[in-house]
Length: 291
Image 1 (cartoon, rainbow, N blue to C red):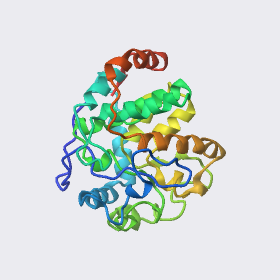
Image 2: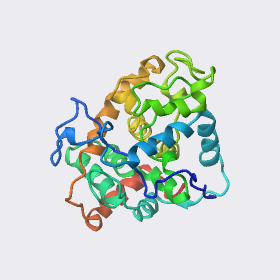
Image 3: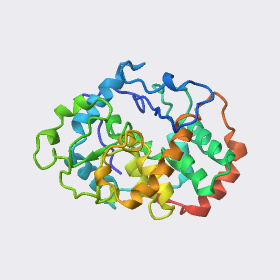
Image 4: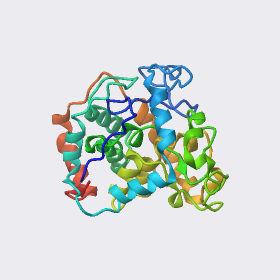
């Protein structure tokens, strides 16, 4: 796959410059950190957080999303063939230097999430979801700009919600002034369902398309919408949902504490866990995927 050059205006040099925490009463109290210590967008710990979202909200247009799906989802040429284990090891060459919670390789975050799920006795496909949910971040290693890989996700093709983080930055997005896209429903119909909505492009949407033929709907919703905080935290976009979305919402909410609150200095030992996860991967996923 041909790498895409990073946006020349982007000041971000690491995998992601954004805060990843959700604060809601339905989430358990984290063991190592208080809720109020996370996801503070009024006074972010890093100056790069606002700049990340300025770029993200400016460039994540309906046209951009369609172009990225054409490039990475529907394009069948130039793909690189990798197993899930290959992708895990490839992603592990990156350390998120901007993560406000802990400084660990990506493999450790994935293992902490999946091991926490396993310790609670959840279904094995749920454990696998914890392991693979962020693997779409390999887009960074394909040369994609960070504002097109990480961060909160949201629908495009309709009016941007005021409950999305830093909504003021959408003023620079061309879709905000396009009468086709800047109404409540935009190009969509009431109750059409999230499956018929174009979401902002990033690792969530990319990973969903890679594994959508192999995992249960619950797992696919966790992967595809775990960064869609305007929906699962703020309760926005209710008018676009169908009954299946409402049925899946509790699963997305169930997943997020494991994604966000399991970051701790205690590191799982991959070599000890590897046999279990190889068996789990082989149970649900093909030997290779076209990335």
